Length: 478
Image (cartoon, rainbow, N blue to C red):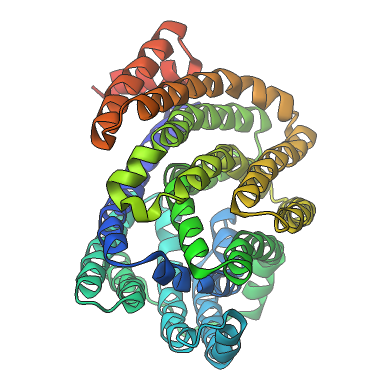
């Protein structure tokens, strides 16, 4: 990796890491406080709306954000055009959800969802106002400003949400928290970026961006429907309590993997776009990315699997004990997130959004079959189905990187295998402490001391490529 790309990557990762994890830590801490004040049923009510909000958000973006980042000849006309498209679609989505709220409530047999849907979905319109500003920050690789915006929104909305939960507002505490988060995000985005749309709308600009973004829109739509379908079917087939358990386990499981995948996606896409015409360089940089993510993600997520029981008991109390096994299984389903994410980025960088769409159609067709079969059983089997699907998704994503760049499944798995085996060792070590130390806090503290030391010592002795790369980066920064 060249010095320029390395410095851009390091700077982007550092600030994106600060943004993601400072926000997540704040949300996590405040979320624990709120979770102790609310019940799984109240979390389940919000979870029931996830699919509708998420799908609406996909339509609002329409793939235009990615199209703006991928194109190197974008101009002010493009930015303004996307702003007005996003805003118009957000109003349309809000109108549909407002009118459809009684149907949603009837589907779940939860009358309270009518009012919740109509208030919660206002955030779609609010969020659309800041979409272009955030794209401009990504293009500029200005993750420092993004961290300020996200951290401010998380702190303010989280504190207000916790206060509302303490005052006994129940599920409305969660709605208010999300509403305030959207407002603060928009305000800070305009405050820092200082970009406002011009009174311009270009049909040619729309067509240019939509030709690329439309395929990503459909791919994202399929992916989001599938992801959020779990909350829909669990809420319908089981209960709000079961959905609350699943939602909380899922939030814990994806805390590390999805956040680092998000960081890697945001940082890698604009950087890889700069070298999109140099295949050899593209693969070398990509290889560094997946190795570095494996070095960090694998031990964190499998370590979480190891300390799942004492962690749940300590943070959420016995009320949530049933989500321990779900959390442990879901950890394995998120293991490959980073690799899958950057694989898709490679296809987008090469301008092959058509392949991304084909992949999503085939993958999600298989995923729907797995879900349909697992629904005949219970929540545990549903989570196991997610693990099976995650490995299938990894294999299929690497199929096209093999065709386009001659870097397929076997080669990538060979690169990642040492990191996986070492992380499994760390997981077993953490599980040992969890099983034989009855005090939850003591078990977690010992695991957090012994496991990282074991991991670092073995990495140092074996001289894993990503560890050596990280070591060199640290030495050069000092």
